[in-house]
Length: 398
Image (cartoon, rainbow, N blue to C red; front, top):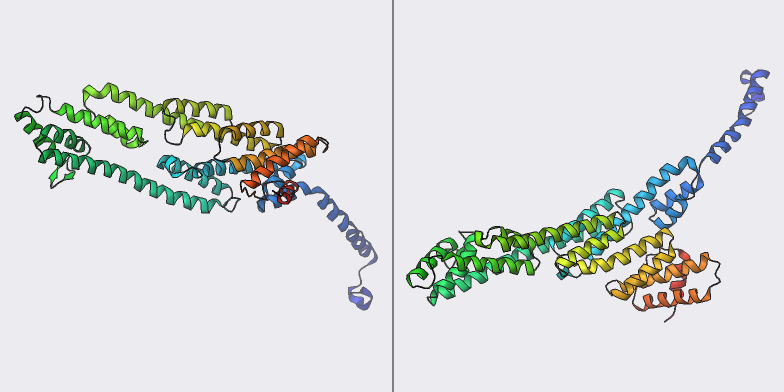
């Protein structure tokens, strides 16, 4: 619009010059605002929102001091998210026989923690959480089924002994059922009543001493010990606590083992979450000393710490240490060998690049490890690793 076409709107000269000066200042102010923004932070935020965490970390590390505090918050979120997903995925990757409801419950908590940070984050935490919950329900049902199967077995043996007039044996098998639930139905009778009758008949027949409850107590101890050996710690704890006074010392030893084992495993998980891998290894070793094949497989967890620490160091840029721990894990365990081999090769290849691409022997080692991972069928998440490394991996032939 031209003011000359509308005389009534033509401004006075002084006002006109003020308008010109203001309009001339607008681009300068706009440029100032643009320069005040931090491109590295904006790029990091975009990468974070797109689940490209590795890129986000690199970009947040370059932000200007004015945005450093906010960038650090995102770096903490990324690390906490990764740790939570790694712990949960590590638990869920075990074979079912190595899992119990306590392990899976911990995985569920870690998935929930990851979701609280970024619900649509990498690794599909919501889907993994649902799978963990479904598995937890199955394990809970299986645990209950195992206990029921053991009760049925004791009932059947008690009935068979009764029918053959072996009342001592009938007491040995019916009394543990009565200790758990006196009203437990067994062949049309209650376990408590069967226990009393079998004990009295055994006395009349001279089958047992006046302390007829002792054989039943021994049987109860065997049942508790079997639950412990089968890693049914909750059931074992309940049974050991209900034993007769003369068996209390032996029961207390098992209760102490269970307590120390679970405490060591819990401490190991906490230390791992805090990235204190040496302490985590020590805690898992303490648990393994009590029961190597116990719930959560503490022996395997010791080795897993090598892998976890190696991955953590890889994403921290400490490629030398990462390679050492990943190599150590590869020598001890095959559970996640494809993953370990890939990141071992990636660590060496990253070192090759940042040291000037001159050490061809290092490059060849990296390619050999990556080729091994590819032969094992490993499929990396392209969003979690440098595109340059992913391209090299994709181009490998074997």
